[in-house]
Image (cartoon, rainbow, N blue to C red; front, side, top):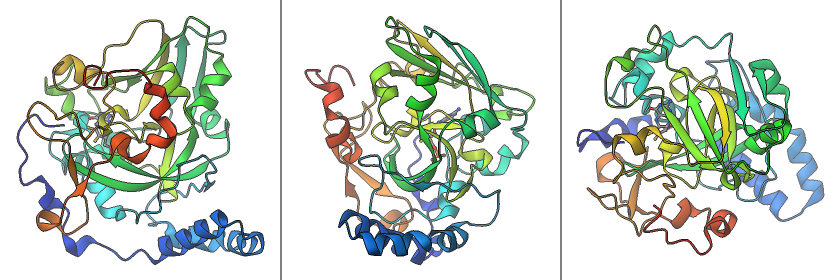
Length: 331
Ligand code: MTE
């Protein structure tokens, strides 16, 4: 998100921080084997997963592994961004406006105890503590591209499961059309709340069918470990076909409603950040183009930009959700 123009923001991705990813090369090979349907090879590769997971962990936080997801589109073959970049170049305004602030300040975030209240237009409202949430469904690893509205992107191996698993548990009523996500706003832990840039708490929203889409991920970990605080611990959303700000961090409540919920960024700048915020190279932000992006870790300022793909490349999976809509009007 841009409050100020952050022209040199990409210099954070120093080429010295690009670490080789032999582990991911190996995993990609494994995925190719699966895709090719070579059963014998698959089993052999599967047996090697434990060893793989051990190497993959950056070794800072508690391990949280997931089995490779079977959800269509959930595993991009692109090389994941270095952990150092994914965990140190963040937007988490509750901990400051600079990209380096969350990694510096988010150690004050206390994630135990933690629970999410799921309420509103559901037959079975409930509060789930973190342990219950973790056990609600099998953890999957999904490698997603995440495109930020500011013009950069990363590729991150997340650990979690489809949000739909949680929503089904509370049984949405027929009248439910939208889902609102409310995140933690605790001034004792979050120095950024002193700033008035947003109307706290940070909230986000999806249409119910978007929230139920199997690619919409409730994430508890990344790179085989629990989420670092600055990436939205202990539980966050990842919606890979939408700009990054839709992926709310540190969620404390989920509300099903019949009216489109207000969202923090839409309230802050209605003409710049729409409710849908699907990645769309044909709809420029009022102050800059959205047709290309820099991949963090690819050679800093001088790296060649990549073309931004419609729905961030997930059109095959999610395009039908928007059939008949004018995406220039409903951006
Ligand atoms: N969630 C909260 N609660 N507060 C925030 O400031 N920033 C958003 C989103 N979720 C934000 C948030 C933005 S702008 C982006 S790009 C993504 O988180 C960044 O996620 P990452 O740090 O894991 O890359």
